[in-house]
Image 1 (cartoon, helix red, strand yellow):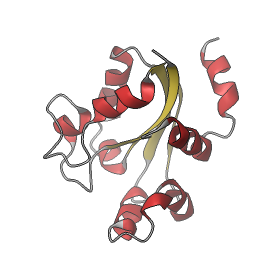
Image 2 (tube, helix red, strand yellow; image 1 turned 30 degrees about the horizontal axis):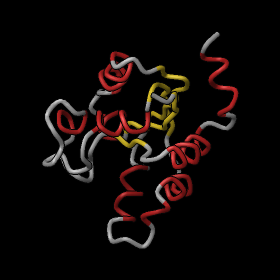
Image 3 (cartoon, helix red, strand yellow; image 1 turned 180 degrees about the vertical axis):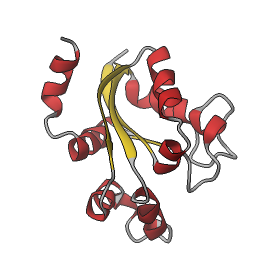
Length: 145
């Protein structure tokens, strides 16, 4: 097992539907540490930076408009094999394919409004954490005090 950090974001539909506490609770019950957490209303430039890999795809503008439609909750989560375990916990992007018991399987209403985002690799996690949390290196030390 490898101690890792990953980036997780509860999307506008999750915030609107008051699922923030329930989702955070799932990660804590699984034994993960929440090292950093904040609610932000993302601007278009930040959203485009976060989802730059999808630029040019047919759904890009819809995705960006959705992400900036309301506040999101951004987190840095730490724990054993955090990247892969968190991805398993959130489930498939399409809620029709997400297993019951996963966050999307239990709460997502559609493929476009699917409650949560999580980094899919350690490299991506570092990039995404850096977008929302300026000094990621100090966060762990502060969280353990």
